[in-house]
Length: 86
Image 1 (cartoon, one colour):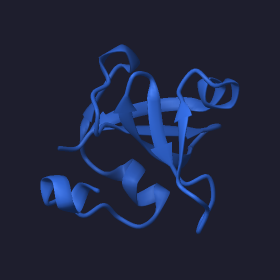
Image 2 (image 1 turned 90 degrees about the vertical axis):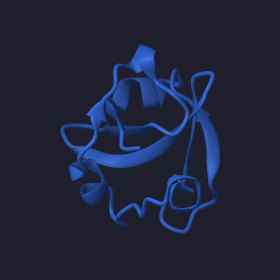
Image 3 (image 1 turned 30 degrees about the vertical axis):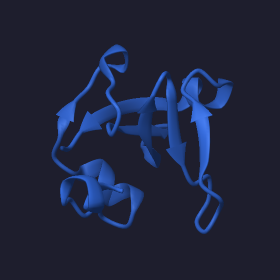
Image 4 (image 1 turned 45 degrees about the vertical axis):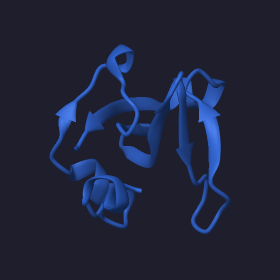
C-alpha cells in the first residue's frame, strides 16, 4: 500500500515498523494512511487507519486482511500510539 501510494517500503516486522521514524499522531487527529500501533507493554500489532474510526490489518501472519473499528473492545484496550510516516 505505502509503496504504491507514497513510494515508501515498510519493514516486514511489527518491531521494525514500531521503531520507524514518524510524527506521533493523537487519536483524534488520525488521517487515512496513519499507522496505528497496538499491544500490551510493547507494540505487537500494526494496522493502517482508513478513516471514520476504522483500520485495516491482518490479524495473524498469512491471515485474511480485515477492517476493524478502533473502538472495538480489544483494540480500544490495546491502543499504544499512532504515527504518520508519509
